[in-house]
Length: 369
Image: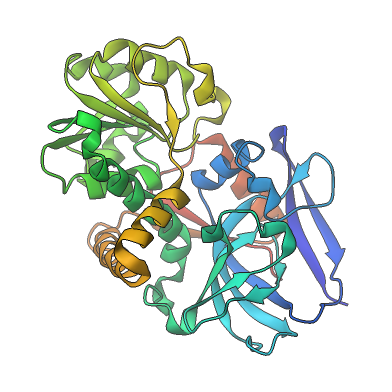
């Protein structure tokens, strides 16, 4: 009998993990079993865990154990068993998977390009996370860049949507003006900066730790990079928006207090897990109320306006421009490290959770033996 290995995380103490191996149940008619061959782990996945209860991320891959969750990640998998006539053994898919060696899907709404997991427990969750792209006909797929796709594709799509959201809203009256991006060394932040840097009238200012300042400057996608204690180098009366990738409550307070023309405070994630401050607790701060950005809502809006094909074409063009920059041979933005096996995966998770890793390193993990 085959088995599945999972990394489980305590929902109320993200540093507490354990590895669980269970026997695989028999498939029901219409189901397929995927062997998860590689998945990326980034600070974005830590955000999924940090907001797991409030934004339902724990519901995608329930563990059946109270208090323990399985963090969703993005990766590549191959079909190893199929009781679905439209999905062949050996087919390769890209999509949302658990930190595990395998997963069972119930494919429905199949097309040449994708399929959707129709499992009952995922029916009410955002559709964008339930889609799996069929690599053989995926326009964004190339076999030699799987690692970069796993690491950057879901993050860049979010980055592209954040930039589009702000442009769609004319930067909430802060154009011309400044876009302040916290956790500037994070992949979603610098993907957003890459896009915003192309907008007229917007100065993109990256905020980061002193240790990561040189890295952020080397990317060339920020007009300026400041350490967190250098916020006073931005004029207090400039129209600005804040794009918060850090979730640091003290930084939010400093920005709301300093900038009298702050037009929008957009909460993306929480890379500073130890300092997370829920957006709704900042009612006493001056300026606009912090608001979560929800990527699926912008996807829905633009798909309705541009049509699915138009949406896909625009996204593909942006992705190709970004990945060419990231993978440039002379100065690549990212170096991939592989971690295989339960102990290596636990260690990599602890490193990413700590937030002290080298921003130039991208972590690709595997629990498949």
